[in-house]
Image (spheres, one colour):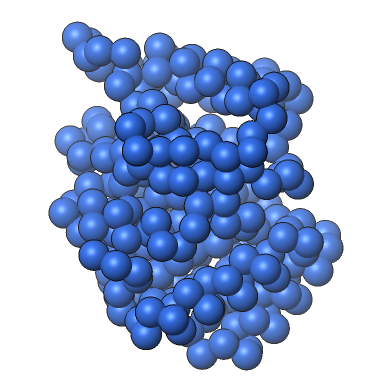
Length: 243
């Protein structure tokens, strides 16, 4: 499979991303044009205090295959949920505002999602690549993923890439039922899917580090630790699975 097919929706949650979002939106529009597909880009502003909302609105007004959404809250979970809600039936790809995974990698995610899986971009499995990432950030990422695997999601090598794909109805159902609304909502999303026997498939991606994100792992560590403990209490950890 190549590129994005007509029933694919690309949801971009964005909060205070006025510096990085314009290039991302133009890159996606160009990608869809080049592949002569009819996918739709959905830019979701999550209560930004900069010009993110205006950028998303202008883009949607100018590009036929684009929509803009104003989320009712500022979390990435809610921005993702509100973006999925405006999508028609089909496959939804969620992507970070910096587009650190190239659009031509979406095909693998979409193909897995079409089989009924929740597909997640992975920077850690065979065939994946992490480019330009500072050593310190790389170490923190590996530590966090090790904790997630130990606490809640054995076998999954990378839960936080941000690039995921799922059937619209499946994703909407899962997103509406997660209770963790902070940075670790992705972890509960995957734990909930696993608890209901939804296949979770890691797809290798080529990921390039781009500075400027709002996540601060050390600052957010206490709340993330609490969220992970809550997920463990709710879903447990599948016994007998390799780490």
